[in-house]
Image 1: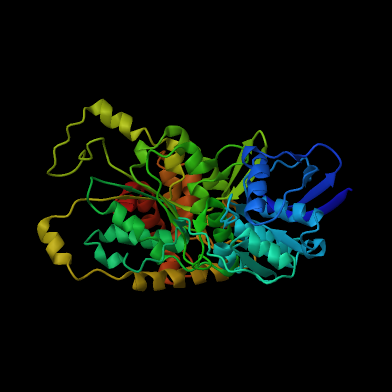
Image 2 (image 1 turned 120 degrees about the horizontal axis):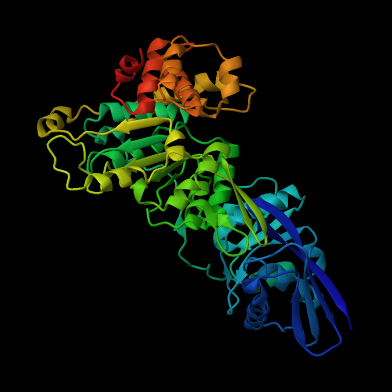
Length: 518
């Protein structure tokens, strides 16, 4: 006797979810299970996982020829998240559960051999896909039910075991079961109230540079000897940024769900902060992996901050791969199984020492590096990468009496964040209807033709004539000047704002940029 039943899962291609119809067909033939539909190795092994889980739950696996098809067959499928849908289709074909219960339901989850339902990556984007395709219910692992409930417009059911799923779909009493207790990574949320800018002694120019960067979403580069506060200030940048809007929070949370981070605390409302080690591979930084590529650190930092400490120690290939996302705000990863696109509109902060020993050019310190070593170290960050940085800030070590003089005088992050919020509000009003929200996003053409022309543009022209600015650098300094004007409450930049922006662009002490080109 032949029987056919269908269930539904979700295939994730980047953040885009595509509904997969899981068909189970039983018919005459030698008892065996055939799985078709372009499964990868982990998915092909679902045959054995699901069979063992069904037996552990007190049910029987079909003793006839069983064919499981994942449609569309041309779409590559990977991972273990299809286990629940496969088992549901098989049990519906065997009349153990009601097939009608599966018509408007999406199932996402991995099965253990004992029948437990284990967490999987990407529950949030999978739930979003189910809503977009008109499904009314989603069944997910018990521990991830709260994550799926972040999406409105769909009923969410969490199951801890296959026995619970069978009882639920067979209209029987649902047995109790302990939820799966597996370690998951914490989300990259920057809402740590302990990281306050007031804790950083001195470095007033660096704090001002971070404030300007936060107000306009500008990229930063910190240089200076070890121990002067580069990492401390960079880690406090996310605390100056405004909270994410609901659409932004959903997008960021979906990326973190796909990357395998824990979202039991709700939507990520604070801008994320990612700080990969300098030994990170290009795949972990940009995204990649076998089959369809997974998001890297640049996507985990989407709408937040990507901090590369000891930037000169990163792989040159990895650093050069940053050039495209810095301009386009997204990453396109091409693999043999298809192309995956991830958003990557992050705020880059680079930190580097002046030389391998870190003491070159530092007053009172002795550098032991030969001149060629200093030169090679400086060229590890290529000119195209440096040209994409809006603000360069040099740190200088503080003397003991300077540290004592600054104790208790630091301005808290809350006060700086309030000024940043006011500056962002001015930008939102000025850029209303353009699709841009911050000065760093505005194109050069819009700067020149649609915004009031600032006084002092001759400073940028002279800097370009002397080879101090590239065409891209002119636009970046122009954008920074708008941010400085927004912080000052001005309607447009003037000579002072242009001069300060030029000095910040070149990494000079404030005011020296004006003297050099005037």
